[in-house]
Image (cartoon, chains in turn yellow, cyan):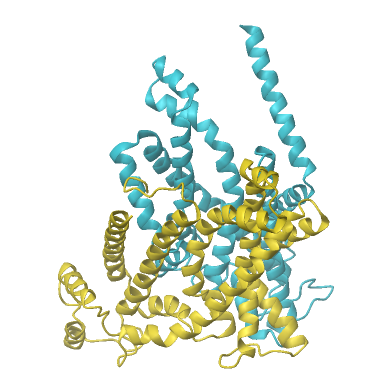
Length: 310
Length: 291
């Protein structure tokens, strides 16, 4: 187990390094420079000075080596655009809003999705089951920015109940969270339903019933625990996705989160911020895949983690 | 010999009929198929269906609500909204299909290489998948759009080059599973070449799963295209895109309701149609799943 974990972590570091290399080269490939040369053209010497100041005059491999060295000290550099900010500060400023929306959404997705999925599975082929399946399919498919527009139109504008945009009070959180949580809730509900149904058909459930266990015990301890295994694989990647924020939701509701940095940093050619936010996502994703594999062994002791398996 | 061949044909026919019956019994799937057919019809014949061209505006008629002359109203520069939506549907469908060509080509080649050849080739494929999973596809696509500039072909390229992970993983998994089956070993035993075994014997068995995947990937791509355009990273004016129409409408949400409602409904209907077809295909191909 420990050997496996160490191997996986090393592999993760390797992947992140390769991603960082590809990103670093691609970022320098982006046409244009971090300065707004369309409006304020830079002349020869001035431009050279600027390039030197930000270390862009050196060859790319030297720049990359320096970047890695700084990364080793957890230094992501300074933003080119917000000149007084380190990249960490830029991330730290957007993070609270994104994390808040993301964690509330995650909480709702779990606390509604799982029970609804269980109930639908227990009453398979009833009207309730069909309704849940239909609503969940709809919820997964309809883009969240379309839902956001409908919510703004009806709840904010027509009924005048909640603010259309902004950030600060709890009222500002309601619509983004509702629009954002619809898809993951539906996904979890549908997945829970299917894996519950699959688990209910298995022999060990018949055995559990045959030996006279109470129905709630059968459902929760035997069916649900086995149904959890596929749910973990689904939810693993969902978590970093939600925590790094839906760019669309933040854009629609004007939330000062981290999502907009993915867009603006590319527009601004803010090299260190692009690298910072993308690397952060890569690390978050790698870690969640790793953790969900570990959780696997807990939910299903038959699964043995070996170095050979991917 | 003939009787054997006949029996095989009969079996194939029966499987086909079974499949059709199961698909048709699923009402949502049939509705979905209808929606998909209408979308493809619109995509092909948009220039005949649309009352005006997508780029002709009349500023005097700007931001009009729906009326008899403009059934869906007009946009901020007085262009007929219905026409723009029909052309935007065409954009969505072209992008969705174009992206599938790229993702399936990459996914099938990489997946076949890894799953069938195994060994160090597979190790490399698995590594590539792992690295590509490290960053969400949409973010990679956003990055590429920043690199290339905005046009429909660049959107297709960006979404295609970032979105092949699922295709690869599924093809690889299928090849791994089928590689050990008796009919494959039999084909190898009579001396069929590796290429022939891979594409004549194994690949036809992978096609149904890829078809189901396709039906689910198309709405995902339509979502992503609209998303890129929503963020201003997608298709440039004057070519219409549903995502762009939705994002523009946000500025007018207090006064001009029609600008947000119609395109958002349209995209919801399109994505739902394809998903229902996907659900129906999957259930009809694999009735034991009962999802």
